[in-house]
Image 1 (cartoon, rainbow, N blue to C red):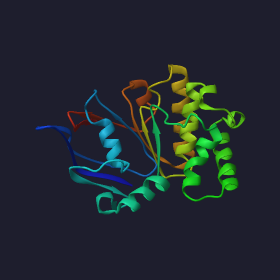
Image 2 (tube, rainbow, N blue to C red):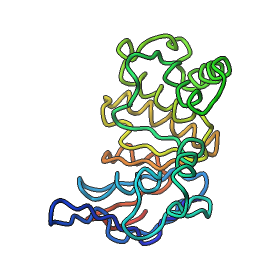
Image 3 (spheres, helix red, strand yellow):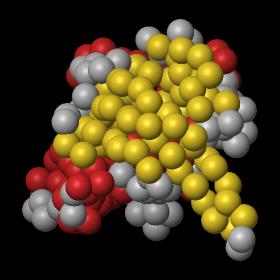
Image 4 (cartoon, rainbow, N blue to C red):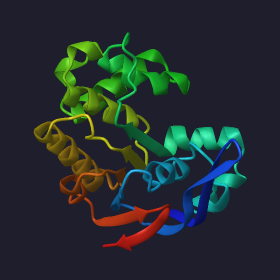
Length: 223
């Protein structure tokens, strides 16, 4: 489903060039739970952003179901991200003035869904992640684990075949983090959703089917 071919990403700072990725090639198959690990600055998040179409490589290609992202128009990439790829980030990115259900509804409303239909679907997603009883609470009234569950529900709004998670347990205590990982694993198994997760936590990495280690912008090891 996901293929990266000789990915390079170079950032320019003044006259200097920083190589975040230096020739990464890999395949991620449908339904896999793949973990990307590596030290700080190894290119983990950069790789995830390229896979998700949030950034474009300096050289190389990313293919999703055989479609080359760099050959898509901006509108096509936007639709790809909205409907086929769910995102879960370390810092949640919820809107503080919206309730849990409104945060989950938001991408559906932006896609043109009727408000009533969006609310019904959002409530179903919150029930799926175990937060039906907290749907009318604001983020400030919820725990970190509950907020991350809302972020996962929002990421699943379009039942995407791909879920990308960047340090999803990074701001959580170990017990809550374990609950989030179990939830993501359940979604992976029950829905057949392909999960690609960046983490520095070795215990979290054990939830994956396969671990890819990056170092200095290149694949160092796979297991």
